[in-house]
Amino acid sequence: MFYRKKYKKDNRVFTTGFTLVETLVVIGILMLLTTSLIAYTRSSGKQIVLYTEQAKLIGALNKAKSLALQRNMAESVCAYGIRFTGSNTYEIVQVPNIQVSGQSYAACDETQASSYGETYIMSAPIVISNSPGQITFEGPYIKVLEGGKTVELEVSGSSPLLKAEVVVSGMGGISTQ
Image (cartoon, rainbow, N blue to C red; front, side, top):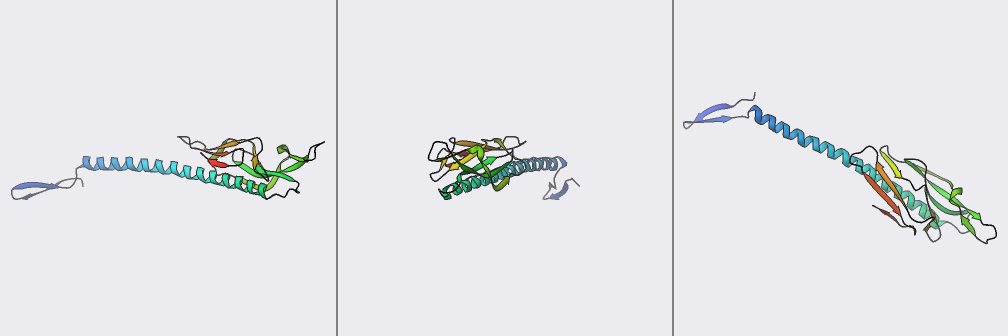
């Protein structure tokens, strides 16, 4: 199969075909290229899942912020936010108004937060590596209770480690890193 055919033309000898060594070298190069392509595809697939989950978290934060902006001052709800309940779950929460004794105003107490009814579960390889516990937006002028916070997401078991961050500033701005 891997042989050279010899033929003569004008008193010169010509050969056609490939030798076994040439064929093996080409197959080896193709295997190396295929292996690197498969490894690249797997890591980029994990990166897509990571950035998708980061976008979902930002969407949930924006929804909590929007709810805080829409709240009526007469409501019994003081603030809305996100509570991280596990390594891959979080939920939207509402914080009730707490009347401070001797004061004419109500205050927010994050420890009294209750579920708003929306829970999010991240895709399997994504985990929250740095959970701030809870991020709460107080309206009508959006501010984050207890200052700015950072949430780190990572792909578990990946090498190299794939990470993404969502940063919430003290004034309610949401950004990524």
